[in-house]
Length: 137
Image (cartoon, rainbow, N blue to C red; front, side, top):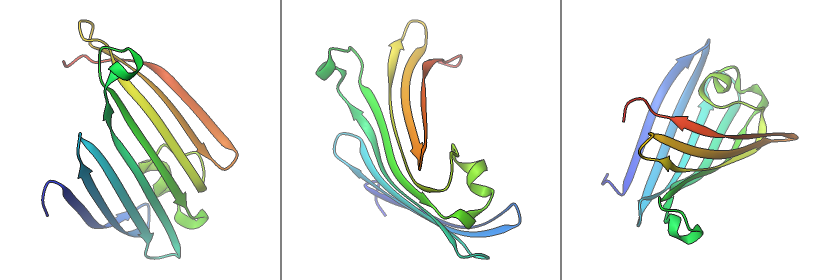
């Protein structure tokens, strides 16, 4: 596949569970990506599905000097999926869920970024906001 299209597939064993995983990514103009992931628990009738998009847009639209990155997805996780989802995701619960995140540079001079993220699954919602300091820039 080209750089415009990419995929991954794997068979995984984790926490006494067997999983078949497939992921497809489609890159479209302006460094934006659509992605789909499906993970089927082989030893139980349980599934996890994720569909989302990520990319960036000009900060000039909202009077900011740096581009704003975004990441958004919808997910569904069956109740019987097991502990794997707690280890590999920012786990809030099973069922239908979603997440939206925005981030950008706060100060290049001080190697800091800002971020805001909202996660929701069922009746549980979480808001994360903060400043990230990079020591390796």
